[in-house]
Length: 46
Image (cartoon, rainbow, N blue to C red):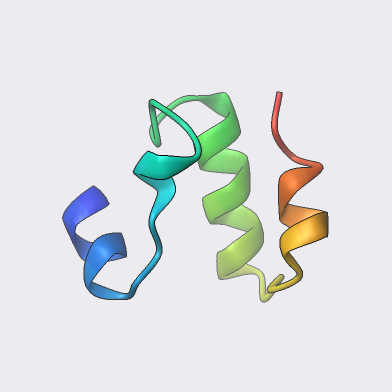
């Protein structure tokens, strides 16, 4: 999954250590729901 995100220029590994953890899954879910505002996405960090 991380490799696919990198191909889309989504660099999660620079922000969170585990994209499959609670924070990573919330952020991915929000992106899939259409959220693009980085401030709103940052609020999902635990």
